[in-house]
Image (cartoon, rainbow, N blue to C red; front, side, top):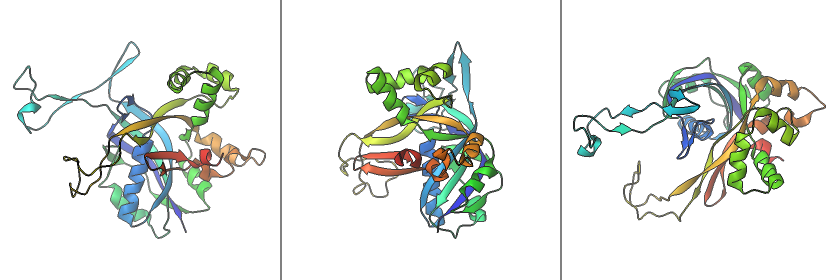
Length: 295
């Protein structure tokens, strides 16, 4: 039997804010899913999905004239001569980065019911999230497989991340533009225009984030220099491109109110909120939400 582990109000310092090579910000869903996978491996079980609940994000950098400039860091130690600035031999080079402080809650579904909150607590004390240091979290608890509503009620407030690829597809079809144009135009819509276009008063806060990767070439073990490879000669490697999708931040309180309304079946099955990863085809690794898969 599966169970849910609730990690409330996880606070992370200096987390990576760069979702992929061209995108800053957005809910770190890929990091959260891989974080759950890492927990599952240490617990000797498998992860079956997560619910990501956003509370706060503090971007580290400057804001001027509507443009955000991430704070940068210099190298801390000497590795090679190339670490030093070409203009100043006494200064270490900059290490381009974009960071933020995060506060989030996670509900993780594990396949084993023999997991204790104490085990998870001990692992979290020596773990990192999205490259950032975990500095605090509230008491970790667990719920049975049929108690997801109780798990969400324990969090009480925040914004659940929803997959809204449906908005992107509909916008592209109705405007007759290509996918890139639809993506950028949709994100540029203000709240009133967004609600009017889709005739949906619940739309208010949409964003973009990284949801997977697609291989650009066949896997090969004939390339040297692969990071963290135990055996360079047998570790398969391939270049990939990120898959960016549209998500919505939706009030947890509203979800809980709708879930008890028998006339509105949208949130009747709260497991539809779970994000999980899989390979829909051999060259694509993708995060998807059960809510979308069920439609």
